[in-house]
Image (cartoon, rainbow, N blue to C red; front, side):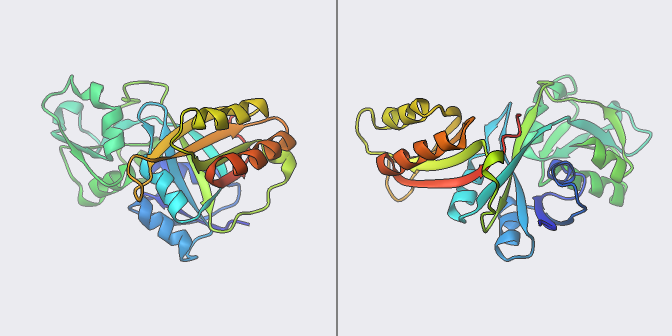
Length: 275
């Protein structure tokens, strides 16, 4: 049983919200300012698992996190989709005209860029974490400073929401994965999604052949992401997510891909959170 989890950010962050929603039991939370720090927390056995954002419906893949999972031999045991609502908040009693600077995580600033075009007097500043900025504003009583963060952060740090849901695209969702160092044995009946990594020969049709195997074995390709293989210039590794109805079909596809693809690796087998 997972009793502790590492997150990027502090309590009130979106990673913290995922921890609260994904796990039923109360958890010990290790607050880390970077994804590297969160991964190190689980590698050193300080925590049982790490929660990592892996892709966003607006900004796309968070590519460094794919490498962190792969390089550190982590195993994905689950996923969670979170509706991301960004709120502009500040100390109580201030209007948006009173705010001169807004600090937040670069991803949050990117997703809210359009909103601030209507407020040219506000300077946008990149920071480490959404909730940590909210905490700092409260602790230091920073007037004329705003944070972009979650509603939970506004409640925890007693800030007033000046503007709600300021993200450019209102349907803004992030996919998070839960990873551990030692793969847990999930029941086959629950497994209907897998994350895989492989590379192929630099020959015409090599990738297409592997993808055809997935199709022939009734796999549904939901994600494909390429990353450069640093040791071999101009060669790429492919990270894919597949869903399936029957575990036996997946086993067949996996056995064929192990032969056809190079450096084939299963990053995780788990339950599809979309079902």
